[in-house]
Image (cartoon, rainbow, N blue to C red; front, side, top):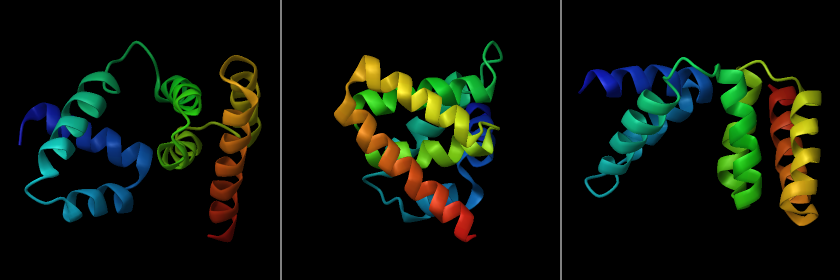
Length: 125
C-alpha cells in the first residue's frame, strides 16, 4: 500500500470508525476494491489529509454537500463522523437548518430524519 493510502486509512478510521472501515475493506471484492483504494487514497489521504481545514470544518462541509445531493446513506455515515470530529448535535442541527434554506426543505427533512437515526443509535450504545 502507498503512503497516501496509509494516511487516508488512518483518517478514514478516525472519522468513520474502525468497524465501518474494516467492514468496507473486508467486503470489497476484485470489482469494488479499486474504488476502496481510490476513496482511501484520494478522498481521505489527499483531501481530508490536507492541513488547511480541520476535520470538524470538513465535516460541516460534507454534511452540507451530502444534504444537497440527498444521499442519505452517506449522510448517516458523515453525521456519525461529524460527532467523532467534535460537532455537537446543536451544531449539526444548525448545518442542516442552513441547508434547508440553500438546498431545499425536502432535502433537509430527509437529513434531519437521518441525523435523528444516528443520534438514536449513538444513545442506544
